[in-house]
Length: 280
Image (cartoon, rainbow, N blue to C red; front, top):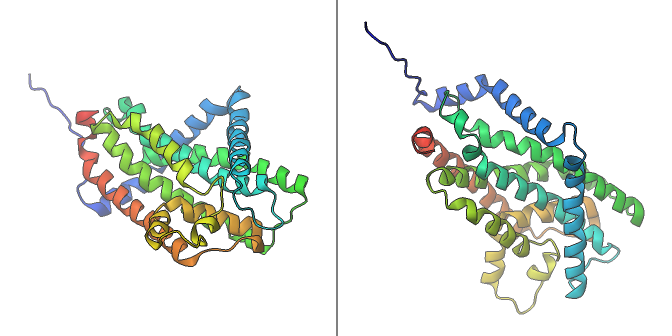
């Protein structure tokens, strides 16, 4: 008696892959909804954690900024300055961490059926986006408490949120692909997040770097290579209005790095995707 085996393989053409990505959008919705239910269904801690984590970071980074006398724009409360940076940073760090570990966490799914693996890390960003919208209430409360009214620039906020998503997706895709083959990378992820917090303008303003009279130009250039600098400065520009200014060369550099990370992340992810089921 002859036994037949059916081997399901993905198309090798990129056009078919992106078409499959659209055809499997139902799986994307399912994975995102599953993670949302796991975090929020019949639990209070999930919602409270979405508020408590950024709130704790705001107070700690605000205290550090006050302790080291970091510059605060005129008329802007320090907590509001820190809050406008903490929210996008928390979104990025959570999205980056979740996306980086998503393939390993869903290893059973990857070895059973074919679907564009890009769906897995992308779906984790949706959950982090829900956390961002919940924690955004902190910013609203602080603005009400301090009687700070944003101007029309706040309408540009979705564009900078999109930039944060691009940054998180690009870096998350790259590290998630590396994490499948080299499991030691899961130990580096918390270190990368912690290090990024201190080199990003969360407790301080970028004006301290760009307007520093004795800081060498090459250090300002290196500082601009951090893609979260552009995201955070953009958030502050939108929310704080005329109290802050965008340093255009550094901002454009951060945008360029974010887009570059996305292209490199997608390219490397696609290159390694065929081996995931074999090595996971």
